[in-house]
Image (cartoon, rainbow, N blue to C red):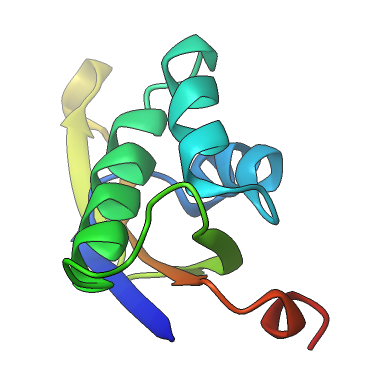
Length: 114
């Protein structure tokens, strides 16, 4: 059985979230939960929260030790454009990036290969 959890419009850069996902993809959920507190990235908080949600979505009958992270990906969200004042009345544009995170967990070992 598969369970999906999504975090949309999260205020993290997709590239930084992807670095955390690369470390936990394909691992069991219990192993990933052990690893996450030791990853020195702020985006790990978002990944940890979404992973807990995916395990919860699997239902009461699912054993968290048998669940495996089958798929985990991040996509770009809308970019918030902001302006910072500069000298002599100028302005500097900067972007606040957002992302959409999806994590799929499954207890089926064959699902990992596909």
